[in-house]
Amino acid sequence: MSGAWVECSEMRIAAIVVVFFVGFGARVGAAAQPALYADVLCPESVQRVQAMSKMKAADPPAAVYEAVRAAMDAYQVCLERQLGDGNIEPGVHYAQLREAQFGVLAGRALAALGRVEDARTELERDRKLAANVAEWQYSNSGSNIGVNKGTYGQYSVYRDTAKDVVAAADAELARLPPRPH
Image 1: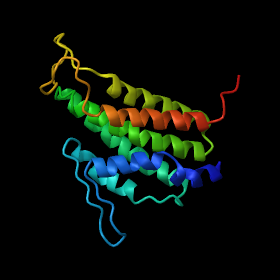
Image 2 (image 1 turned 90 degrees about the vertical axis):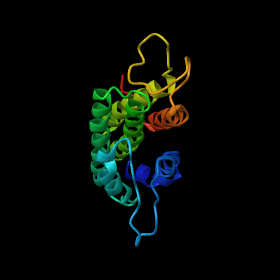
Image 3 (image 1 turned 180 degrees about the horizontal axis):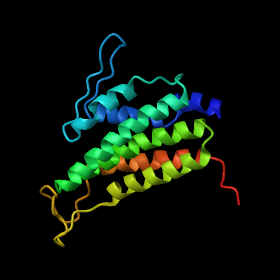
Image 4 (image 1 turned 90 degrees about the horizontal axis):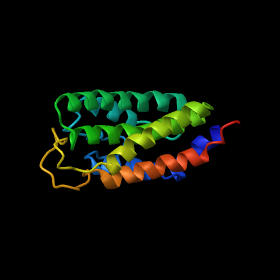
């Protein structure tokens, strides 16, 4: 599967990486310039995302997985904090989406390591996280505690990006060999 890792730059994953670096305030500059990255909703993620952003396609999949997993762990901590604060929209949804975005990269790295079933499990989990964000709607049922002002039927502000993550996870799942019967 080592050849599959080289194809990373040709895949849709690159689009997701660009979306979350551009869409969420990171600027990837020349090697001499430090990448600027700020995350107001999940400041605990900054160092780990910066470390992950230094990874290159030529880096060993195990090293990429470690860096991506660390970023995912930071977003899990953020998710728990946002949930504890009752900040569902946008806080919890943002953390879920970011974790799912990095999870697609983690699934890709696991596949490159030959850990196909681990990759499948990771990608299915991340697809579900992103789908939950894409499908969420504000309701007037009283279950919107912690939701910033919204209108009945309004979707998460991260819906479009969540749909992109679902599509990326589906594409990666399709690349995996079928499950043995």
